[in-house]
Length: 339
Ligand code: DAH
Image 1 (cartoon, protein in one colour):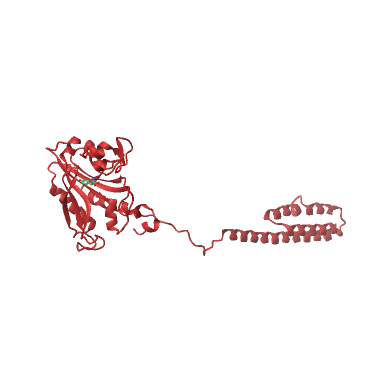
Image 2 (cartoon, rainbow, N blue to C red; image 1 turned 180 degrees about the vertical axis):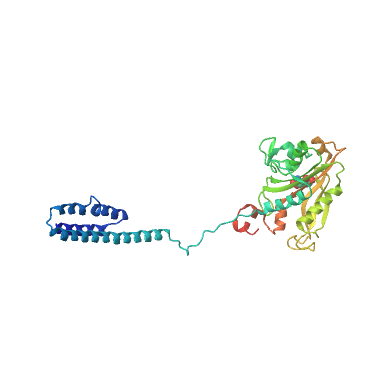
């Protein structure tokens, strides 16, 4: 029996040594020391022993149990350490790795100008109207009093979709849409995208932005047009900016004017930004033509109004000193990040 016990101990210790997981350890504990385990099985035979043998074998049995138990414990701790080390190795954070950069977007310079101009006019009591980029020939040309043979109507200048539909060449059709549906008085601006069949170069893009403005009511005069635009220009370019109204011709206004402002960079002396002129042309404007009012169901004997149209790219290029319009639409992040 003594031999059996010692063999059992050897076998158990060997198997414990080979255990690879904590589950193996638990299984071995049950196998050797459990109620129905190998050790119990052998010790059951003690009843057959003589009175002298019994305590001797009992002592050996206890020693074997202690040895197996101790070995199990040691191996269990060892495996626990290994598992812990593996877990730590798995979860290790390499603080020397370069971090992931969170890139924060910013507004495009065109959006910034549109927002600035909109804020200024909203501050003057205007509301913002929107119109579609695809509009009718009627809204884009006819209702705006453009003569049938006006060069801008040519296929070579305008993107036609059908005989009656086109990509708007200006934001001015929003004037027509607004007069047709709103009640008077009207005081709106309308920023948006426009399209012309231009070959891209430093100053032309087939897609560009304008901001239209229009005021219609009783007794709206040219003096109010001048005051409004002077206010706008001072808020955008600085209090000392001066304006110059040059006579011009637009089909939808009478009289019409183009507005120049003193260069915000040199104050009017002449510099590279204004190409030595001292003045920068920024918009077209005028008193809404009686034909346009009539075309939109408004009686020119009772009502009058003014309108203006600003080129957004031009403003952005002057404000941010950009010398090529194409840079605004290439979406080069390194360029756009400057603004
Ligand atoms: N639509 C004109 C253009 O594209 C700009 C313009 C001029 C708009 C005078 C107006 C205006 O409302 O009154 O060149």
